[in-house]
Amino acid sequence: MSKGYWIVRVDIADPEKYKLYVAANAAPLRKYGARFLVRAGQFENPEGGSRTRNAVIEFPSYKAAVDCWHSPEYQEVLKLRLPVSTADLIIIEGYEGPQP
Image (cartoon, rainbow, N blue to C red; front, side):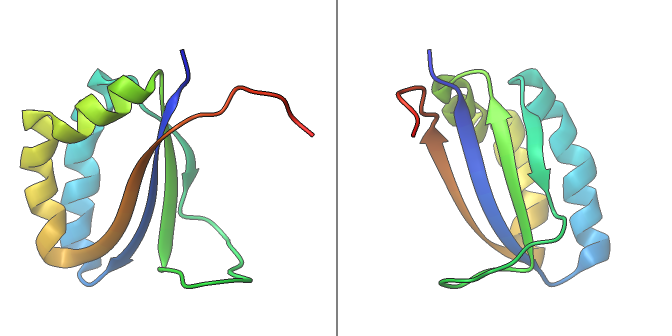
C-alpha cells in the first residue's frame, strides 16, 4: 500500500493566531499516523510561485491522508487556520515504482 502525503504551502497573516492551529493540529495528525518530512525551513523557488511556509506530511497510506483531512477533528482545527492564512494543499498518493 502506498503512503499518502499532504503537500502544503502557506502564507500566514497572523503568526500568533497561527500558533493556535499548529498546537491544535497535533492530535488529529497523530491519530492518523502523520509524520512531518518538511516543516518550514530554508527553500529555493527556481520556478513557478511559492508561499512563505512549506510542509510535506507523510501518512501511512493515501486513505489515512484523505481520512485525516475529512475527519471531524481536523475540520474543527482547520477553523483556526482559515481566518489567519492562505494555503495550497494537495493530498497525493506516494510512488513506489521503478527509480532512475
